[in-house]
Image (cartoon, rainbow, N blue to C red; front, side, top):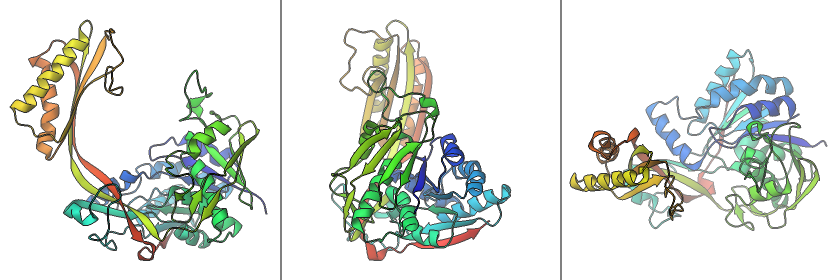
Length: 445
């Protein structure tokens, strides 16, 4: 049996599109995977769906599909993505419309649903993982509850002959594990092979991070041609061993070091990486450079999958208001500090209620909160005030007070920006696996 080649076309929702096109045209792929769904993204997508029943999927879905569909259809590359976000069925219909516009009639597009567990969740008994309380304690502020699905729905869609598969919430590695299980006929209770497949999926899921993007640090870890960063490909053998590579001539670098950094990325316990399909064990993983930009990956293991699935619960948390203003020239830092003092006093005088606030000078103590500019006088400083409030009205007043510095002093302020928005936050809980049922809906272009 020949190896299977899987490319990672995106590592997040707003990622570049050209590397995915390059993978389709020059990567000799069997599958192209787009991982585009962060935890909070799906709560925001649920809000969009509440406003419009045809919305709630990734905003770049159409542009991405129009870019990669012609080449993928011509070369037999099957596409799997979680760009369905809160509305996979609407996303599948949008892919069908895009295909028809491109003249690609007859294309089978699958929507995998079942991750929306708002109705199935026992709110009073579902304890929050990050803090005390249950989902019920959040009251009517809850706007979404999505379980992390595993490979089941994608396997059904592949078996049904879908050429494009659009999901909602699904674990990131599962997007890559499913086509391997389908192609090689692996057992879904072979925990060792699923653990190794999860290692491959985890290395690929952030796309350009493993080819040197997030790795780059000039003078310490130099990476060539980052503007043309190539995205990774896994060439996987039937026994689960794999070689990670990228399109020859593309930018970036694939080394044992870039793979090591990605392997531990967002992993709390390498011996027990909890996934809906397996508890993966990364502790025996071996990475070996066999040629330039070719890294052999083996040694992933696993144990039986958990009985419960993780659920991301989105809820309306609070509001934030923000205002910024710049000062330049001699005495810039002193004038910016005075600006912050004035705004702080004004917010007290006018009774703006804040539950949390920051008053900072960008370039002085905003990111490096300890400050590292002792004795150094910057020529330009940007004062920033941001606060969390219980009402939108108070959030708006934060930026307004910064704006009034224009004419009320100190001297020379300019370039004011201000904003106020609702904060949608995410907490986690667990749900019994038996309460979650993946389903597949097929659209034909």
